[in-house]
Length: 250
Image (cartoon, rainbow, N blue to C red; front, side, top):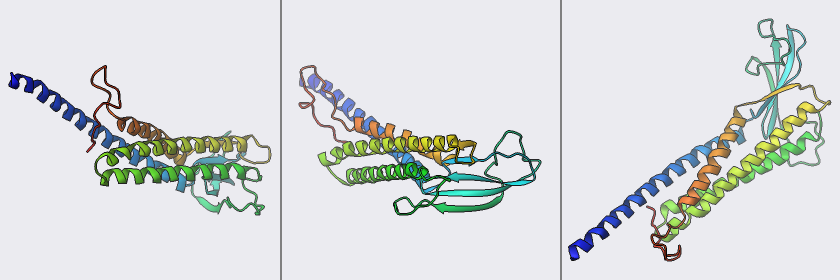
């Protein structure tokens, strides 16, 4: 009788161990996705190819001025349009064509400076907002990384507990990335609609795509990590979540 009672217990223990293995694998996948998301977001923040702006081109064999910009600086490029590159109704470019390029850093946090950015001053407000929000995103990523580091080096319940704030920090970083993207999108929209600028066409470039990827990966993987770090559901209907045995994630 004792042997028969022991078999179901052994089976339950093996199933529990198997579930923990699957959970550890899911957590490792979530951490890998977070690393990719952080790389994408960091790349977007430090590069200046969020959007490309082009003025109208009336005829070929002339030089036009296109621009690309990011959170920190604006780069203007003088491009010579030949007959082969000229397309009627299209703007100056593509930006990959050879030409002289001049980049100027935005003086974000110097309110005393009366610099003209994008040919009208109010544009600076959008870039200040987007840059500040992106800094918050980086700060949340750093805090989440510290929690993950503490989880990897810690032991016992503290090791599992640190996964929860890590997931929250990464989710917050994704939300900040989304807000920064929306501010930049409104910035480009206002630039094109303004009568004080020469730009008529635009498109979002690879830095913007990196920021979008970073937002999606950080937010979804952060939520996934938070869910995976939650206590296990009770095995019996009469149990509560507080009564259930805590899981140790190795």
